[in-house]
Image (tube, rainbow, N blue to C red; front, side, top):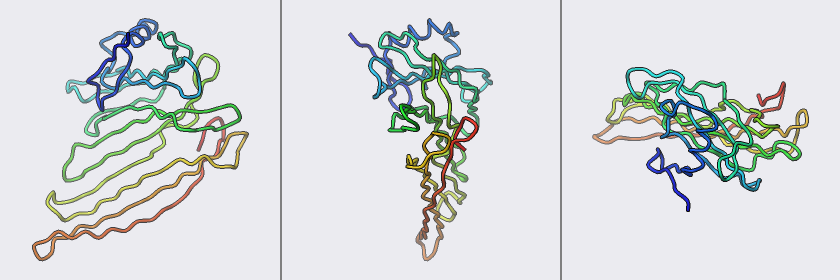
Length: 231
């Protein structure tokens, strides 16, 4: 019988028995785990394998929403036995710009012969109404031995920002990037082409109506594999 921990942010679900076995193996202080951000996803390219992300608090402040954490990123079998373990050295800070969600991306990131990476995404949102802000980033990993190798570090996929009078007038900018696995290679790893769509909006209040003027452009750049990571 399968039991799921539910009620997590964005409706994330994680198998209870698997989760408990992982926590026991890691010997983590349960009170340090940010359970609302724990998530898992089955690996599509490996049998009996699950990617699990367990965020652990390394610093907590008086306000509940202000903290720093690091992610344990694991690959386990169905019962929660750990195959690959990696404590990401990157620290995630939630403060006025709050951590909103952590997800797993199992897209087709075939970055070298026999190597398919997966992504861990992180979303933040600002708390200011006059200056709205949100962002999302992705890091890429692949199994190597009994750990994971990180090849892309917190690459910004989406960012939205603006400044307005909270009624109509103001300026906004949205940038959305997409990762395209290219045909070319650098140091035996596939290049990653980044397509970015940028939209700028200007709102003005005229004749008792709010008017929006929008412009957009698309740009491309390429991330190449150098010194052990994409940059």
